[in-house]
Length: 280
Image (cartoon, rainbow, N blue to C red; front, side, top):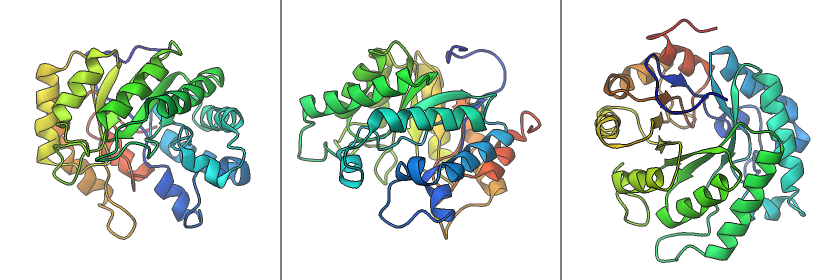
């Protein structure tokens, strides 16, 4: 696969939101998207295909909860290896020209006032990362992280597979601080120093603050910066053009990999990419 390290030219276009797209297709309240890997794989493939048609060059597998205990609460046994294999196959088939990133979100085991349980986290992330690597993922993508200690354990597990690993954080409402009190900048520097191939933020708001963070990252970080903000949740989703306009400060600052999180459809990706290349 092509390295994630920055090269001259346009940013790499990432995909949009999976969970909100499945909700729009009827995913029941309280269900996990991974359940549809078994029950409705066609719906997951449709989302990947929508993002691929818009030009996404990297698509994230539908495995956000693969390392989390909540998966076992909905699927007993959790069938981690089977789900990873289905998820990678669906992404590869629906987006044949894109790189497939094995996605892993936070486990819910680390929270303010509750230290990250090292053994449980290492075991959960280790099994999930190995399953995604064995299934043929091109890289691993640790997203929506909010606790620096948990992110570190996830990154160690991901790097043990030999694949490139990307880490993105989701900050509190102020956009500047993680739930454990760490500043976003400190967390990004820490993950870069531990061997992440790219670092960044996801599921926050686009706009001036993200542009300022992208400018800091361009001047400071030794690895590419990722911006995957959210246009909004159902009922309050920014239009594609508005989303693209609010991302211009980050693009002007030199963000290397850019896409959308919750609420972002293929139309949002097309609007975003229109400034630097024609969509497929």
